Length: 131
Image (cartoon, rainbow, N blue to C red; front, top):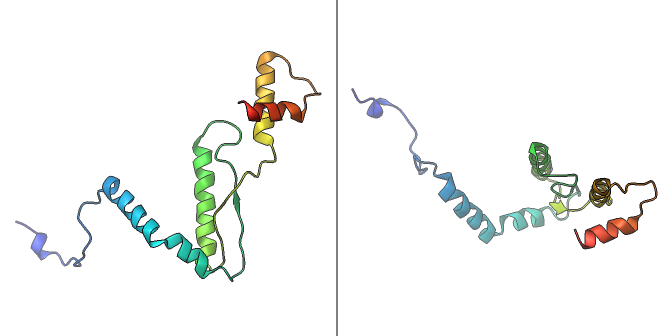
């Protein structure tokens, strides 16, 4: 017996197949063309500001699951604050105060056996100019 016609399901224009790989780029493109993010930010420009700087994606090493968790959490926070009506723009930033470069310089110096208490910010500048 075919039960399909006996079910009381809502009529919808949504396709039965999700086809995310094909549809997501189309959806993102339509949002971009519509300027959706800009409209949301502009509509709240005169409201109270909520600012959350998003630091570098992986300041202290390779990307890992914590990196994704951090990005997702910050995204949730900004969306929540926006839905509350606050002006909460996405602000990428480098809020580590030089730590990633200092960390990498110390790693390189350890490999060379040259770590000392007297290493300077000059080493950091040299490393950042020529990683």
